[in-house]
Amino acid sequence: MAFSAQIVVDNINALIYVNDKVSVSSEITYGPLLLSTLQSSGMVICSANNAVILADILPVYANYSITSITKQTWQTEDGYFYNGDNFSHIFRAAGDQQITTTVWSNEMLYNGIPFTFQFTTYQVINLTSYFLKFMTTRLPMLARNQNQEMIDLLTAGANFFDVMYTKVRDIYTLIDIEKIDPTFFEELSLTFGH
Image (cartoon, rainbow, N blue to C red):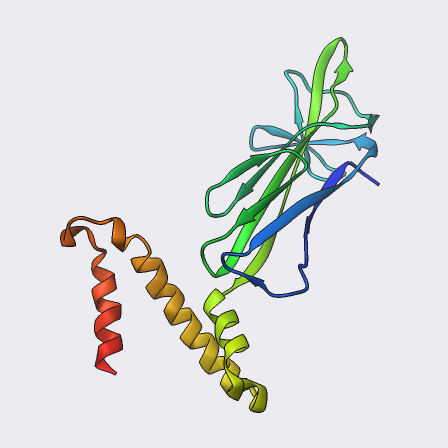
């Protein structure tokens, strides 16, 4: 198996809610890596698994053995960065969120010049509205009437509350009414209009 990384999200088969802590780790595959290179947009790509070769020169076709990683970084779609083999993060918005990790292999030598392999992968997770969690656990009518229409209604309501929360969560730190996002008033007028 070639050098690679796979992202592991705890409880990925269960609903993941906004504002819940998401624990993320990785499974690294070590082993031989046959170097059969392709040139792609200024980088040298290892065709075995799309690992990027970081070197001042192009190593020759050969078998290399990845025995460890020297660095691992993470990036979340909402703009946070982490180092290490795992991290925990709280996402603040519902919907699809991408988690990306990059790992660097142990250093190798070609004609006395060091080089490493870099592998990047990502996983998309879907975050469910916290308001949906609140409504489904607190509404006795849902226990009696669990059909798709009811779930759709609650999901639409939860998405509405998520938008409202996102727009007004910082309102208490505002001093001036002019700093309020105008779309807040649009959402508010739609609410009162119904």
